[in-house]
Image 1 (cartoon, chains in turn blue, brown):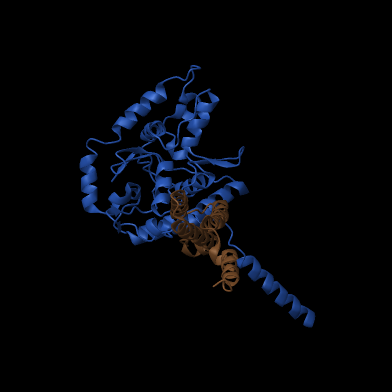
Image 2 (cartoon, chains in turn purple, orange; image 1 turned 30 degrees about the horizontal axis):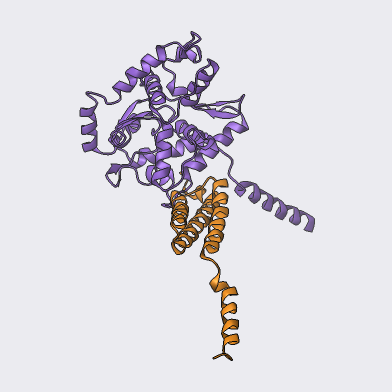
Length: 280
Length: 102
């Protein structure tokens, strides 16, 4: 009797240790909770409209955007990106030789988890891998050439639903969870996390800016920002966000930046690519 | 007066060797070194603040200009900010989970 009771008590402690010792990673459950949170908080916003960021939150801002979009400020970047995309490398090959479907209409599949290298590969990284494989120098992840090329590739993919996969590989789950952790971790002297703005305060103002919801936030990248007076890559946006909360940015396309892009892109699954975008 | 001279000399030399009279440049070097240690720890945690590095730069600039009082103040502020960023990183190791949408 005493032995049975002791065993029962021991098992109950074991169950509690397993249940609360760190919840197992469950991207599907996270996805559902994430989607429900935003659709319940903003019931008047149609699901696909979340990819329009602040324009889905503010009617006046949306009107300005619709007028600006008659002559899109990112068009120069798209045209330049198309020319770059179609210009052969010195060895005669092109970007089309590196990508599925010749690189057209594929933005929605990035980033992906590369099981060979054990890392998340973003579109920007894949472009530089392509350049390296063909004897070309890499592009700076923050500068205009990368922004133009990714703008063109996003443009060819407009409307296609995000389809980010997490393969059955513990390293992929780990990358997803690191991305989730990065997203929710407070940093910088101002002690903000990405979630501080994009989960807790979408639709509200921070200084003069209307904050975008985290749902669909990757869909419009790369973006032309009026504040920048030009196109900017995902790296540029992440590093500038870090600086704005007084955190020293990581190196562009740092593993953590790729992981957070992976996490947020997975949360955007099913939503349409809307890039390249224009933002205030 | 001549009887007092040895006493005066004794007091003067004691004053020179007391900590309150250590060279200002040495104080700055010590404060800067402590700040650098904390900054390296913050770097290792990938959680450096921009203001920490600004304060360290201000410390060096003040020291280069010979204003060691200001240099020490800036260096100590840099150390304090670095320590705060370290504390933030350690706290956030677990605190982030409380913000997650479930």
